[in-house]
Image (tube, rainbow over all chains, first blue to last red; front, side, top):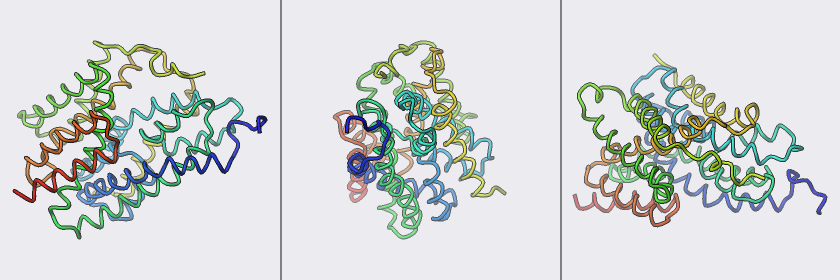
Length: 247
Length: 100
């Protein structure tokens, strides 16, 4: 047993991944249902919504892209908003890259890269030692279908459910966003301040003459770049913070 | 007119590239403090910008959306997980709109 490599397949590791993926899949299902409602407004069919979620695995990124698609935006604009809204996955992948043992076959990196999300990154990085990709695969096996099927069902149900139910479900996605931003804001006054400033400027800009005529997606791009740049200049993050726990 | 499948392909390509580049090509920690700080703040800022005031307009009544925001922040603050926060937000809107 002790000679077993960190990356080798083990039934137990896969089962652990599936077990930890179940609560995540449950959350994804609820949230992607509400994402489907946004996809429907953008004119996507249930199959197209299924594909978009299967190949993106990104809540904010997909949502932002759907709002732009609904506004008939160009492909480049959709690419930019996807880049901005998903930029955090770049950081997470950087951290994950440090956790592959040097002898892990290279193709595992391409498979793990398929589904780097806030939650899957969280449970993967929380395990001690070198990364065993089969743990993450187990969780992906539950989470990815829940996410893409939920999106397709959201598009279908958006037509069938009463307006009041659609209204309630449409905030599930914002609930997910809050679950991502509030805990770090509680720990860091800088993050809390940036969240408050973002809320405030986003509110102002949606009413300000001139700026308010820009699409939601364009406003999101501009505000994100401006506020994050200001944050990075005024409150640089200590460099060891992200990768401190790497062996 | 734009094609939905091309939209989806563009999104997928960008999403996958962002995730796969650090895993395959970069593989070294980003040293530049400005870039690192910028990337660290981007998710919080972009999710905040997308949440407010959009959550208020997402529901049938702005009151229920605003209350969902308050309840969602409180739930996340006191340690509720993703699923619990989302369900709490939905429940608030559903209940409030029963009375409006």
